[in-house]
Image 1 (cartoon, rainbow, N blue to C red):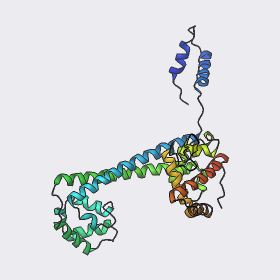
Image 2 (spheres, rainbow, N blue to C red):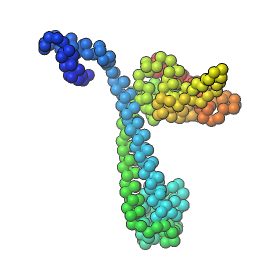
Image 3 (cartoon, rainbow, N blue to C red):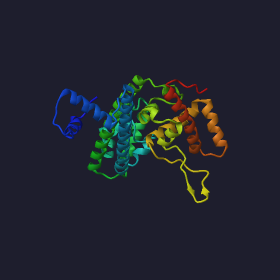
Image 4 (cartoon, rainbow, N blue to C red):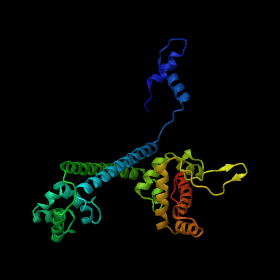
Length: 309
């Protein structure tokens, strides 16, 4: 553990006598530790913190990539609006990216040699696009009503490069998350429906489970607890969830609750019960998440796998 020398130095200066010895230094270090309530962290605590930082960084990368993808759609709609109808699954595919990187302009696509265009589409789409598709694309590019602007072509090219860079960074971050999760060997992975992603968020956001003495405290930390509304003699019997605390943990728990209902009969029956009582989908998932939090709290507290059958 690293400790700042300034802390002990300030305590030494508070002493009326100017003394510097090994025994005095030892006493001052102990005193500083007691006053500042320092505690030792285990390797599991360190791994939890790493997961928390990595997954929050992953969320930032994903938001940044999504923003650039939206910008790319805007640029393509201005330059070559017909292109999104040619690629049925959208322009965010390998074939479309390869095409725009090769020729980010409808006029240049129209002037491409048919064999070159066919080979490009066929290779990047793994055989999905044939020669007829290449012919249709050339005709579409010839009749395009988009704005002829070289600046837009540059913006498209740079946007694709940014998206690919973000994708590479996300792959590297997710690789590190998987490595930490494998080393962590947490019992939470024994819950059907909770994989590496949700498990990493839950472990990282919760940290030391001993901070939460009861499941209700963990629910409150995730913002899944019901809000309280009372005024005078009125006391609301049904309120919405508070949505306070860790937004990322709340997302992971709701997502895990839905995945668990798909693979586990116990949670599926509980979900169906809430739906039969008139609850809507997300409201029912909130109740399932409550049940799931109790399971997670027990598992992490006792450090044993829990039987959900």
